[in-house]
Amino acid sequence: MADRLAGKIAIITGGGRGIGAGITQRFVEAGAKVAIVQRNSPPETMLNEGVIYVKADLSNSRD
Image 1: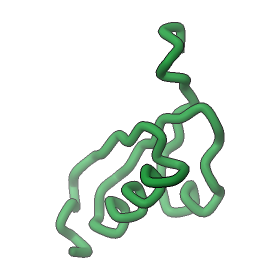
Image 2 (image 1 turned 90 degrees about the vertical axis):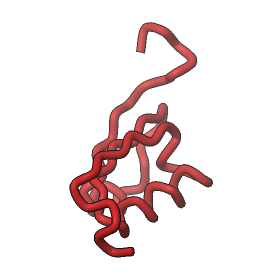
Image 3 (image 1 turned 90 degrees about the horizontal axis):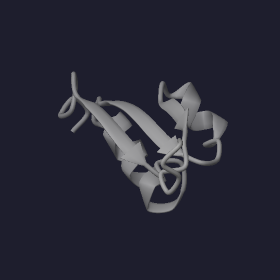
Image 4 (image 1 turned 30 degrees about the horizontal axis):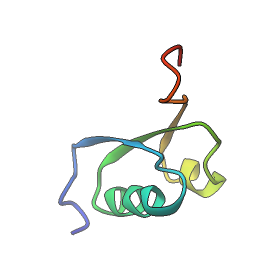
């Protein structure tokens, strides 16, 4: 499954914690480029894996 998502881009809301973090990890392992959107900063290890972090509160239309 290492290259199953190679060349694909995924945007994962809430991708830094809980189930979202697990999904982010699996997508990265499968070769996808991943952007996560959430209110709080994700763990540094995710950013070291090439994950892009976008700070936004999706419940706030201004974000």
